Image 1 (cartoon, protein in one colour):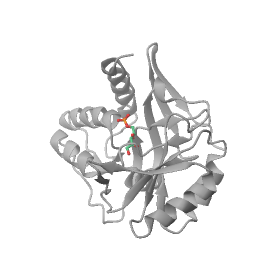
Image 2 (cartoon, protein in one colour; image 1 turned 180 degrees about the vertical axis):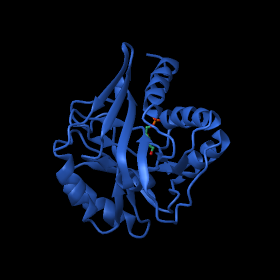
Image 3 (cartoon, rainbow, N blue to C red; image 1 turned 90 degrees about the vertical axis):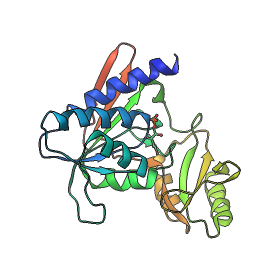
Length: 232
Ligand code: 5RP
């Protein structure tokens, strides 16, 4: 499928996601190409008179939201987020995710964890029977001693760890950290791995979002599917 066609599936999923938004809500705004469609659609709602406030997960998203006319909440205040909406890089049959392809995983996870409801939008190609394989797991790490942190991640996972670079230099996140991408074939126990990775000194956060999704919206060539995740 062409990238234009995939983008139209992302757009359809994003349009379905904004149907969950009600007047007066505080909305966590994800980052990425799918989130961009959602922000534009939310901007239309604001222009039609809906009162919303947004919590952006990146400076890119903050700029898009401002352009779309969505008022933003000061991130250093106490917040109550009603709904967070974001894209993902992979989703498994238990609705667990890999995120962080765009490097915004830390703020995305803080916002998802703070929201009463977390809505995830994907095109159908992001579905995987098991996480890993085609998409490496991003992990945000402290630059100080990152090589030692990477070795510990390698020892834990038995997988290759690659420092993410841009133009030949380490990519710095908005939070002034590095990202390493872990090339794991199969992530059979994502919950256990997330816990173990977070215990390594130097790891700030992982791109594993386990047990966080409330609603999964999938854009497919046959139409949009909305799945409500059963809570345990
Ligand atoms: C950014 C993310 C994105 O949600 C993820 O990469 C999906 O991006 P897109 O909607 O562009 O496919 O996790 O850190």
